[in-house]
Structure formats: structure tokens, C-alpha cells
View (cartoon, helix red, strand yellow):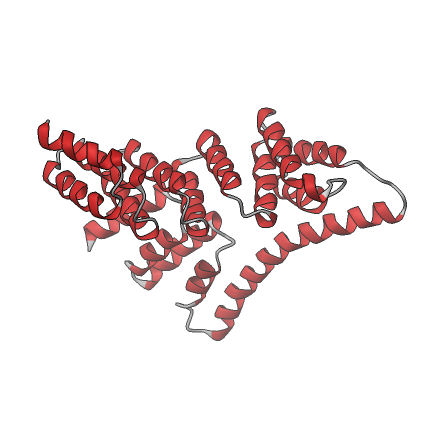
Length: 285
């Protein structure tokens, strides 16, 4: 148990935005220690419903439970309040014929980001990004907006633009852009989170599975890379690229027998000329 607790403690340090890691840490400790862990957790993932419910669960006193849940509701209301305040402000300006162009709103959002007001930046983009954008041009316009924001170093603005665009266009190329943004500017944990999200919503996109597996492998986590490819097989078993990536992973990590077995399986599920060539080379190499 001590080893498990030490391992999960490291997990909390390495993945502070992962609610499941915090929940597992709390589960492995007694109630008093779990309370402390969950109190720290809400500082990192304060929007997690699961974390707040777990924090309320050990409280035997009904009033104490209500206090914890009230804090959760207050935090959520604060986030919603920012969105509603910005939306109301934009509508009020429009009602009085004070009409800002979308470019002006984007500059204002970027200014807020530079001043550290990230939630305000996100709320402005959410409320104004669709302004003056012709329906047939929205995809290209928003993509260009995100690229321009990133080029200026306004990463949170770029992230908010892509998040809005993805709600309207659940497109594979947009998900790839979002993943590339995280890869360039954020932590391994945030990149893994968005890649996990993208393959869930777009399981047929082999490039995203391959990107996720490669990120895990390059980070030195071969078992995680292997697990990603195993999940990719379920989603897209006929993919030549996924089979060959799995073979390469095993072969370059000293698992020649496993690599050989994968090649045999690939001949059945992804019987392409390239797979056949790899089988031939393997038998004659």
C-alpha cells in the first residue's frame, strides 16, 4: 500500500489536471488524509464535478456536505457569470449602436490574456467570434484567427478560438491543429488529454492515433504507446500505418517475437503490398 501511495503521489505531481489521479490518491488514503488531498485537488481541477462530490462524500454531517457542494456551485457560477456578463455587455453595446468589429474584439481578448485575465479572454471570444463571419467562410476565418493569435503568442486566445470552432465543426484537421497547439505550447499532460479527446471523437483518424502513440513513445513510456496502439486496432484494425507502427515499436524495443506475430496478424487484417514487403524483409533480414 505504501508503494501504491508513493506512486500515486508522483502521479498527482506529474498530472495535476487529471481528476482520476486525484480520486485514486484519495481512495488510497484514510478519510483525514483524503480530505487534504481533495482540498489540494480542487485547486487544480476546480471544475471537476467528480472531485467536488468526492470531497463532499466523507462528510458525515449533512451541513458539512452542503457547505462543500455550495462551494462547488459557487465556483461553477463564477465561471458561468463571466460568460453571461460578457454576453450581456456585448448585447448592450449593440443595443446602443456601439458596434465593434470582430477584429477589435479579438484584440481585446488578446489584451485580456496578456494581462492574465484568461477567463475574460475566453468569454470575449465565445461571445464575439461568430460576428461578421459569413457562414460559408467560418471554418477558414476561425482557423486563420487561431493561427494569427498563436503567431502573436496569444496561446489561450488561440485555444479558445479552436475550442469554439470545434463545437461548430467537429473536424479532424481542427482537432489536429488543437493537438499541435498543445504540443508546441503546453505540457505532456495537456497534449495527452487533447489527443485522448480527439481520438474519442474521431476514432477513424489514424494520424491522431499515430501521433498519440509517438508522443508516448518519445516520452519514454513504451507501455503507454503500446496501449494507445492496442486501442487504435479496435477502432481501425485495417490500418496499415497502425499495424506497422506497432511492429516498429516492438522491434525497436527488443520484442522481436512480438513484432513477428504482429506482422503475421497484419497480413490478415491489413493485407497490403507494403505489409507483405515488410513480412518478406523480416523473414529474409
